[in-house]
Length: 222
Image (cartoon, rainbow, N blue to C red):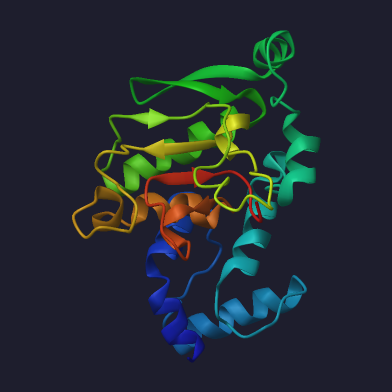
């Protein structure tokens, strides 16, 4: 696939970058002028200068425009280093929650139990996603210290912990956005919502091999 076609296929992601004001390019990315402009920018930032604006380029744009947010952690070790460990039960978990959990109000609705270190990023991305897509989930489910669903099916492999345990993940309207990217799901019909989180480096369940349509998490590789 040539760069212009690649950029056309990622039009929703590029629209999200524009909505976040992370778009320094003047020319249309699907034209030869746009591809050349992107390629020149990639070359100056140590990227493959192919003119196709994908995840590696989004990461560089994020660094340039939102350096205070930092890099999205990858894997359990980095999650623990950035967000602490809520997996202990009883008093230890209560102390972790007291130190790390906060609430947000986004466009008039309260979002409960978000990790405090993620709160500003989450609030800004959610506001942008709602504004660009027109979709405001009625239910946003966040903190729930538990194992991953289905993680105990293989008795030889200990089940891992859901990213909801750290309050760095959310499920948007679970009853409306079931597993499998169902055609009528709001998140499928309105792809700009997920695009905002995707370009910001979050992992979106819509993109997984077994789609967990409702799910978004501020980490990768876990």
